Image (cartoon, rainbow, N blue to C red; front, side):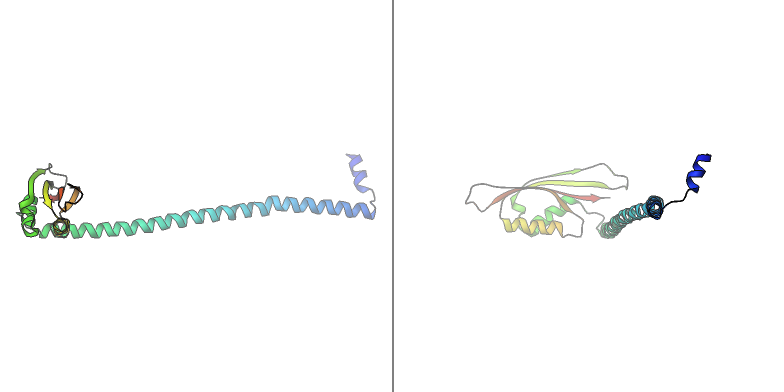
Length: 182
């Protein structure tokens, strides 16, 4: 220990003093960077990443909120339309009457009604599969338009169109329409 103090008490030349001062300064700068600057930069970087993640999550939440609002509005509209619908409404009779108005009633090969069991809300799903033979594309378009735009909440679940020869202007259609009934 005494030897160390004698070494420190010794007089250094100007050049040695400058070298020691430079080395001490470099060590202090290194320690400052490692202990102060580096953690601050690292924390700032983490904060930027967190901010970007939070912005992305917020954007997704806003999109989900808008989707929820649209679904809720559509659900309320459907519920109102369902309550306005005639209590004696049946899908089979609706499709039959619409076929008469669309001019395709004579082309009906078959209509097969089916219903599912009551769901949680006390409603049952009603499905009618029907085959229309030898109709034109305009007749089909008119019939489908009548189904999809009715206030009775009926929609086409499946649709199959086939054509007999290359020059024949008539088509055969098998479609499945669906609605909810009380």
